[in-house]
Image (cartoon, rainbow, N blue to C red; front, side, top):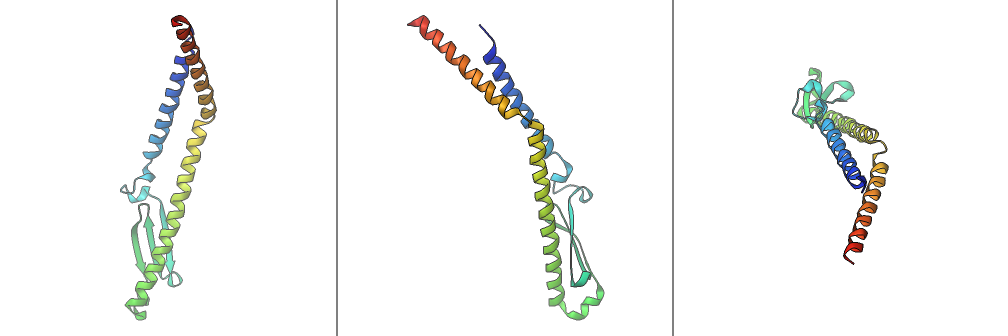
Length: 144
């Protein structure tokens, strides 16, 4: 009797283990932790009022800084608040685009690491299924 079913099962187990390891490695990257050191996080800047208002947002949807040129105080508090909102929204939109691009890169990296594993796993599962059918047929032949 051959060990093909056990070999296929072991290969499937190895595929699952490698997938889990790849996902764990991706999750543990410093840029993925929104509560980490601000220097390690993705950053984006938004501006308004011709650059007189600057907002820096960091991964996790938090603002790192807001800078307002003192000359804007003459415009009044409502106008100043409107400029801050525009700059903050621009920074957060840029940050969202960076996070999306990073996530796409992570998926691409995972796909590259796994390579041809799905096709190999399919073949191994077919071999396992055939071996199980053969074993069942032999058992039926013995009892029949």
